[in-house]
Amino acid sequence: MDIKEFKQQLPSKKAILGIDYGSKRMGLAVSDLSLTIATSYKILYRKELVQDLIELKKIIAEKEIGAIIMGLPLQMNGAEGDIAAEVRKFAEILKENFNFPILLWDERLSSSAVESFLIKEVDLSRKKRAKVLDATAAAYILQGALDALKYA
Image 1 (cartoon, rainbow, N blue to C red):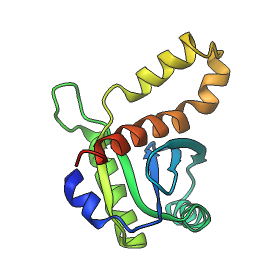
Image 2 (cartoon, rainbow, N blue to C red):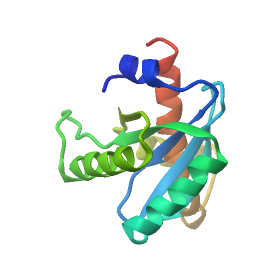
Image 3 (cartoon, one colour):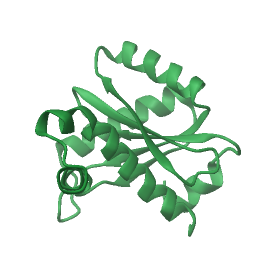
Image 4 (cartoon, rainbow, N blue to C red):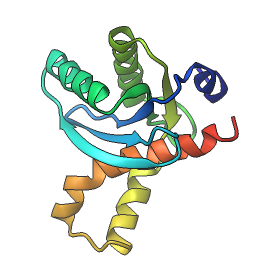
């Protein structure tokens, strides 16, 4: 699905959940209802798939989510590797369970951009960066997609 098709499928007055996928933890971010601003929300520490889906279902209900944007970790040459395949598989599971639009968004360099920001601008220690990096990366990914939606 491309961004124009995604935009056409968005329900009104619903937020978008941004996910920075990881096999051990996922960074989560949430948009406002006007789809203008992404805010880092939390880190979901992965357990069994069923437990992860239960936790996501709670967040979706609580935050009035109507769509998901997941970071797709492409290689620098644009090719997809093993982790991108994992993301696609997880996105299919989410689509089957939640039945709303899911967009995979190129996340190349998002984590390194966020980490650089956290070091240079916020001056966080390595230990503190580890606690916020995934959720902040999810917000970075989501914000990029929200900005692109304005022009789609």
